[in-house]
Structure formats: C-alpha cells, structure tokens
Length: 314
Image 1 (cartoon, rainbow, N blue to C red):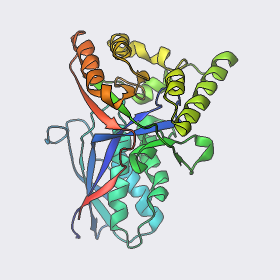
Image 2: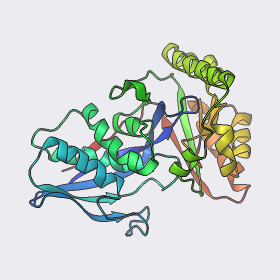
Image 3: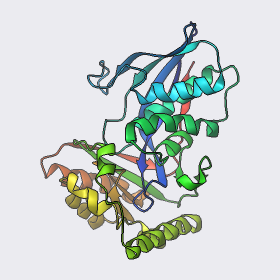
C-alpha cells in the first residue's frame, strides 16, 4: 500500500442569505481532513472516522455506502478507471448538522485526497461533480452552495442551471464574515423537506431582485448596496424558528453594525458580513446574545477570500 495523502477542506456558509442553493462562501480556520492511500483491493474502505475531540466518532458510519467522504471518493475513483482501490481516514473538524457544510467538507476533502493518488490527477474544477455525489447523499438535494466554495474557496455563484460551471465572484474590500455556531443541531435534509413548495410571485420577484442586486454590489464593491440586498425574505422566516437564539443574535449583530445577518445554510449557525474593523465586536455581541439564551456557542472570523481545499501532506 502507498503512503497516506491528507487533504483539508474548509467549512462554508450556504445560501449567503440572498442566494438559496446558489451562493456559498468558504470559511477560514475550520474544516475537515481526509487521509487516503492506495490499496491493491478494489473499492473504497473507511479505516476510521474521528470526531472533534480526536476520538472515534460515535455516529458517523464507516460503511463506504453510507458516508459522504467515501461516496465522493468512489465516484472519482470509478470515473478515473484507476486500478485497485483506496482506504481513507476521516477527521471531522466541522460540527455535524451545524449549517457549516459539514458533509460537503468531508466529501471535498475526500475527492482532493483521492485525486492526489491518481496517476493522472484532474484539475480541481473537475472534482466538483464527484464531491456533489457525496453531498447529495447527505442533504437529499443536488446543490453546490457548500461543496463549491469548500472546493474552490471564496464566494461562489453556483445555480444548478449552470452545472457543471460555477463562478468565483469578486468580493467587497474591507469586509469580513463572522460565523456563530450555537450548540444546537438542524438536520439539513429535514429542513429542506419542511420548506413550502410554492411561493407567491411577489415573493419570488423580490428575492430575485435581492440576489441580482447583491451580485452587482459585489462586482462594484458597493457596500451600501450590499447592505440593502443581503436579506432572505423567503427561506429565513421558515427556518429561524428551529434556532431559539436567532432573533436575539441577529438583533445584537445589527445593533453593532453589520451589512447583513442570516442563517448559514439551514442553521443553526448564524453569519454576518461586516467591516473588518467591526468583526471582533460583532462576534462578541453575537456570542453574548446566544449565551444569554442559555446556549453555548463558538465563533469564527473569516475573510471573504478564504482558500479552498488543498493537499496538506504526502
């Protein structure tokens, strides 16, 4: 068997409030790692899955048919027609059901590690469909708003109608993302099933206008327009009830001055975009509001140009 190759994939903010299933943002400082090595036997085997504490994970499966990392790695390995198989180890750094792209980070780290073992590795953009195969298993839908930024970094526009193409967007200067993770869980697949199946034309047009304005604001580096458009008038009202501290955290963020604040993915994590100079104060205010509800939490501050997945060690 060959030596281990370890890849890191960052957590991400899905939807970015205004772009349900179409916008995603990579996060600095937190992510999953997957180590992989080639084997003589066919297929993908999971040697172990470890949790945030470094111990064997009590819930995540080592069945290769039931783990996002192995499903994604198998998709790539089979498509490449590479002989033999691979063995992987998964080290979770992103909390489960956190709204931080946990399943996407595992899938992305796995395909990046597996790709490094191929005789003829693919370009990074070509790994997206294989990472999506793993993410689709976990989330119950084909959407790239966590996978694409985790793979490529930065702010990504990824509407399904353009697949497999995605677009790395320009980001406004002097702006940071603050992400707060309350000690709660929200199952993404369940949250998706709970959404309304149809919407009034007025709501649909309003959200389209906000997305168009936000994309233009990023291209123009127009912070005023970002502040006017970074809102979710359709999905956030349906999901925020599952996060007991949401309204208080959002009020606290807005009180100290942010461009916008909403759920990250289906929650429970909550993100805000703000001026870099205000990021620490914003993070502190959001944490205080969360803890005032008796809910523990942690937060991260990230640039909007955080790097995507990468091989860390061979």
